[in-house]
Image 1: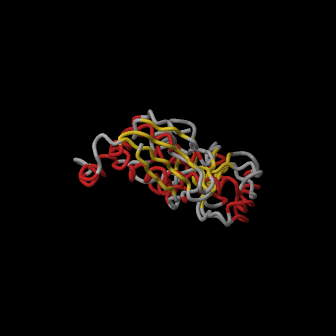
Image 2: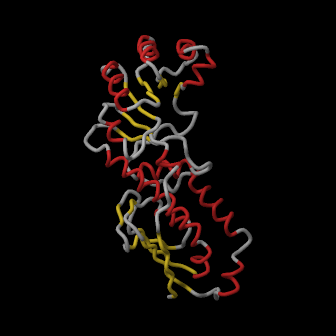
Image 3: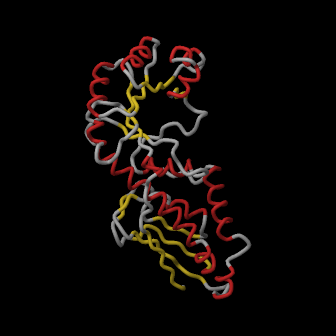
Length: 270
């Protein structure tokens, strides 16, 4: 679930450590003997879905993972244990917690959305609304929570949205410039839906509709295209949208509005 060997992941951890440690942890170096060894345990302080514990292998000499990405954890449970020089554990405490708390927050919120649409056949998708520089990690966390990853960036899928259509001069002109074949197209009215279907589009994004409007348009589409819904979708209404019959619901909130979960790190000398 969490590919810690990916160059973007390795670089994200390296940059985070450099940002925090810089030329050295002056407090720890002043207080803690260089030869002191220690063990540290990461505890869940609330119910959560864990994400990112595998990153501890990139930050500590020895890490034992008790809860892997995608695993649930209850309040008080140990999710990982690390061992090594006490100075290293202290110096890397905040960076490791920042990653675990942020990524587990994304996974936890994502699982709530996934659970909310269970049984409808609809898949929750993530979006590009991620923290700059951390997209791959945050999408891994969304996947750990049960979401399906949408496009990673602008480079790996054609998604024609309303501004593309406006600048190109209409749906037909926007589509005529595509050479890749597999296209997703944003539509907002019945007229746009019919035009897209007549032009052969087989993946439609219905944006900013109410559940009732979405249900009516999905009934009109009648299986002629895959349907994704987005815009105005929250935990308290996602079930209603899913019951309208889409194939996918994309939710930016699972990354841009996830709240970090509470994880505690306790260190003891060996």
